[in-house]
Figure 1 (cartoon, helix red, strand yellow):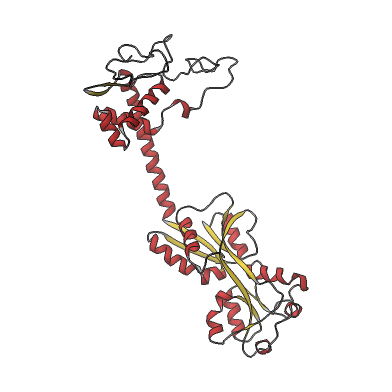
Figure 2 (cartoon, rainbow, N blue to C red):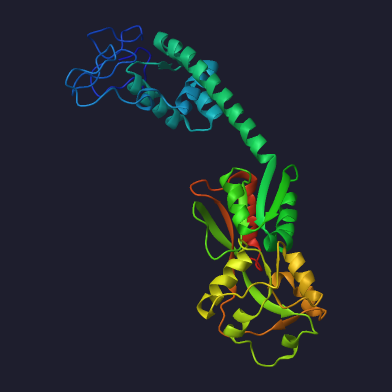
Length: 364
């Protein structure tokens, strides 16, 4: 038994003592030495090399070195000379601290702390281990400081890529809410069609993207953040604005329309919806933004296909008229996307949370 021990609370090794009377590490022949493991069962030799014919190599370092919490506790014992005070410093109970010390002693194969009515003091081996522990904890503190600096640099900016409808009609509200939560985060927004959003994510030029297509592009993961519906609209002067019966799908497919460019989510949905009816006719105009398509329709250039999110004011003021159409599925999902296996963190994760928390944007 280690001297000064009360109630068998010192070093335990499931059998006889492994500690010299002065509390130092055991000598060869009496038990394992620091850095060695048991020879029985084909384990490593005291020199650290695997026994010839052993079932496996030396155990991983994580199994041979005490965890950081145990080392911090040992350093606290050294500072206070009291296991109770050390336990209070690291925020655990004294029995838990005693158990952690005993577990560390078993793991290392030596007694580290002498306990007595006058307090707890380090053994000679414990003092040496404490010196090593201090270096490990200092290295861990440097690691933590570096990781915090990296997180701070990451959290100082957010790069968003979004397709046009989402960029113009949904993201402004989401970004205002994000700024209230993260006032120090600088946000940049790149707007383009859904294909361009995917390209920016693959190139590492955006932290999170938003697309309007039929499905998540290959190589990306995603989640639905809102629902939308496309509408056929025309200026009040157009003949379609005065018709009573819904458009026939074949008539819609055969009519030149004002459309977004290929690669846009709007175009993908419309192409798929009319593929069974002969496909889209050659566009009357092919424009690269929702705003441009809307302006062309309002001017009377021709009927257009637009998101319902984009035409609320125009429909209310009768600058555009919604044209009913039958048998054409025009609903679509709006998704947040990111490279597969790299779910957003930091500000990007917070932005995703905001998109899901707003009732009018929530997936149904």
